[in-house]
Length: 165
Image (tube, rainbow, N blue to C red; front, side, top):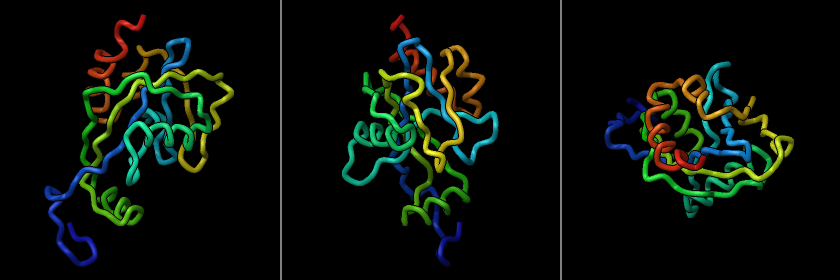
């Protein structure tokens, strides 16, 4: 790949560190969000990148407040699993323009999060999200449709959520 007149071998690039929150409410529903750039059937969990000098849990709580406008979140547990994926060349270039660093993809730390507020407490940032909804866990496969997206999430659900009742 060519960036600023230099050939870059993507295999030598690091992964950007990020976070994902599997957010459950008191009704045992899970929160999924739709990024502004997503199609009408594309969903994910809230989260984002880890800034310099931030721990993963600090980054997650910051991202939840930024994206969802609420502080009614509590981290319950962190998964031993990580979501690791490659970016296409366009995303690598976009990330370089935004962060000034080259990354080959993202490695996401995944957390189980409890939401203690009311539905009306969620006020999405329209610059990042176009929609959100609460769904039963059983509906996740219909919403997490990106290639490989559900694979690691099922491991996390088995690890952290199954057995909560």
